[in-house]
Amino acid sequence: MQYVEMTVKEAKKRCKKNAKVLVAIQDLEDKNVDVVFTLKKRGDYDELFEDVKTVASLCDEFVKQLNLFTEKQDIMNIRPYGIRKTVLLK
Image (cartoon, rainbow, N blue to C red; front, top):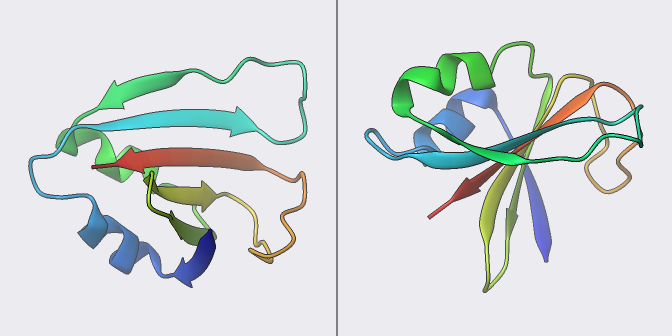
């Protein structure tokens, strides 16, 4: 797997214009919460990118995803601070 750090603007471009995406939101400081994926539409994208300070793209042969963090992160050493939103892309 390879992580690539990018800007919010670059990440928004990866969410295609009319695509529906699956999103999971996780509080990294609370380990007692189940993380559930929900369907989001293009109209919800602005809300997804609110307060995002670090964006990492993860690509391998099985899945494409964006990890959006509300706190500045070193993408090679993620710390349990803030909120992580995981966006699964087609």
